Amino acid sequence: MTDRQYTFIQRIAVIDKSGNKTHIAPDSVISADLTEHANMNGTILILELNDPATEYRDNLKIRYGTVLEITYGDVLNKNTELTIDKFFVLASPSEKQVLTLELIQLDCYNLKKPANQPQFFVDAEPSAILKKLVGSVPVIVDCPAIKGTYHLNAGGNASRLIRKMARDYGCLAYYSRGKFYFVSTSKAIAKDSKITLEYGNNEAKFPIQRYKINDRLFMYETILDKQFIRWETTAGMQKSINSGDDTNGTVVITAATEKALTNQGKTIIPTVTVDTAGFGDFKAGLSCALVLRINQAQKELDETLKERQLIEFVTHHAKGNQYLCRLGLGVQND
Image (cartoon, rainbow, N blue to C red):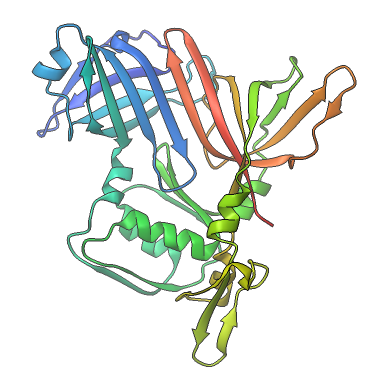
């Protein structure tokens, strides 16, 4: 193997069923788009490979079900550690000597597979449930250790169950670079990551090249702006607090606790999408400060958006020597 460094994708290896690895030259990469999400969508990779002799398609047989081991990272940022992840090929269309691979991180894929047998978790803390569901992946839990009861039925998938748990506990649940996170949404937004994204300031550490304000409040109003109720044996009928009203309907759910009942109406509202230069430490689930200058000369700021934002997703785009990032930011609804 060569020690040559590349823009973002450093190494690629095809892993056969026996565990043997066949390496692919990173020079074959035409473009790479790695998207990390602060939810159960998982880490997604779109990889374009130059394959004029169809060697990768025909000889290495890269197709649906193939597993690739990929090393990626920002080599220009000396503080960023390289990540080694396994990816599962979902699709591999080939056209005009270009093999396009659509991949999902392997552990994320496994969480989306139908369960072949049920699992029952009775009065268990989130950490105990997650460790059973995600297998050998290290789990980072930062939320109240309130016990809950959850069932994974045969034919269901762990990813959907974890989404439900995250909603009940008011948490972000996501995979990121070798670890699985289940953290309080409010804590994640409040935590300072030392990242300040600025538009209209060329001297900023993380200048924004362009941005687009998203109007996605309708997502909350049509899906979650409802009153949630549950029946509790001793307390009787309980209603969600500060979580919508009955104007858009009332929904009866089986929430484990009264706190979980109120959390049903909480979500992240997408606010703005920004494009920046590439930076390997941009990760979904981190908070950041957002500064938008309407008038640079007068230093007038756009104060319609909250300064503290959550990175909902980040796409690392590399093509040739070009490395850019697109970040989707959002805030928790009040």
